[in-house]
Image (cartoon, rainbow, N blue to C red):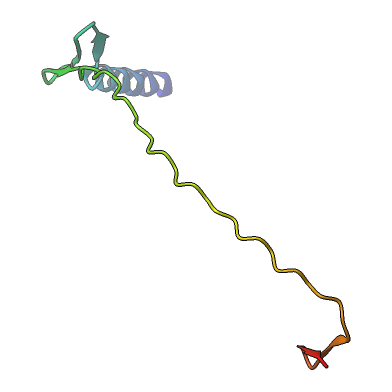
Length: 86
């Protein structure tokens, strides 16, 4: 009796699984790609690659570096974070 119940349960589960199976086929071509399933088909057109645009870089302006000030060594010292020369 147990084996009959188990067999019938297994048969019902297999039948239910077989009816809910979804088969989808997809393909990719040169210009199109698409999929076909139980509910219908979908087709997508691939985008066309545009040629690369030229990149123009503007010339940089000339940088002028000012000469550094000459440091004169003298009786200077730092007091409270300030430079004091006397």
